[in-house]
Length: 272
Length: 270
Image 1 (cartoon, chains in turn blue, green):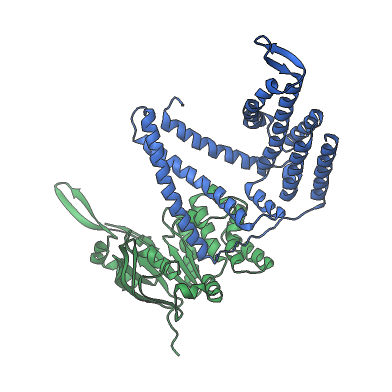
Image 2: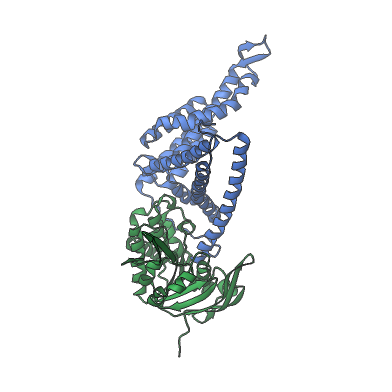
């Protein structure tokens, strides 16, 4: 818990979430390699790269794809330090926990033995763990590049290229739209609570406040949902979603799409 | 033949979970009229606007639009529903409720798309409306990143794009800074001048004279009084009773005075 106590740390969490979302949008709106491509190309292209990573069994090929991801990040003006902090270290932490037992449990040639023999590190175990971590790191890097370099609204529109039902897209869009409003409301609720709190709260009291706030927030979100539905009805909504797509493919986009497909297929074939 | 009124409400009752909001309200609003619904918080202004927009239906009484009853059954008919939704537009008090699309462009295009207009027409009308409202530079911005004034302008653009005959406005200038307030009032005045029907719910006396030729004062879900803006604003007893003004008390030496406290664009009276 932060030094300022439970309320302060919760508020810092809300503020940080909003700040991160805004920083991502700024990256998405600046000039760069990925940003110059049609959002549909970005979605299809980066999805192809993720697929290639998943299909590759050779660590060298995955390593090469990782280098490609880093080069794309630099050309798209995504800070490598940001990737280290927000992607690579986090993924390493999660995947590391999953991959770690494989070092000892995978049968094969022993590299080192502990506790008189039964606990052994094997070459195959190290390879399996490395492959898993490299695969996840690279795939998540490509996915993060898509999210960082494409406004969420464009990702949603581009998803229609995959024939995703419009209802699902509208639901995702509205969730994204109102999550910020609810985060803001929650932040204000905690600010208001903190302005009337003297000293630090005990853990139990902090949990009670969280539970009550969650209840109030739920009521507010239900009320907001009803109001939004009325506002939609008022402008002619009758249950069927109609969205306008205004994307245009240029020769640069076709070139980008071809490059992604070629690199993806080549990697999957070499790494099979 | 005499034209039916744009809206006619007869003995309308409406309640929220047993708490009455409208209580035997009867009123007629003619085509091209500009009406202010004046009342304190909880007087039933927002409920009345929602009934006029056929979002709520009364528990008792009748509502008609251009001589046709406004009922859930009528709104289930696609032809009537589309025509009604195009002709009558409501701007909600809280713009966050109304701005549910991911970008400003999508927001303004939402109504025309529901009306099933062609892509070319949608693009041209949306572009023209955004230029008219001075929000073209906000085109790709998500609504949660806009200021209060910008949100209000986008909310207005999202209904004006349909070129409705009736504009229903719920507290259009509340929470706005003076410049944004003035812009919204200018817009309402433009609409008044173009033979459109404008019905504005407000508790801000200082804007009533600018936005309405007739004022309905709502008190506890009924029409407490009706008249021109000048007549209503001059009736201090009525305004005090409807909780629209308060007595202003101050002292000169040992003598304490009590005056009505009124605001208007040109003067601030004690």
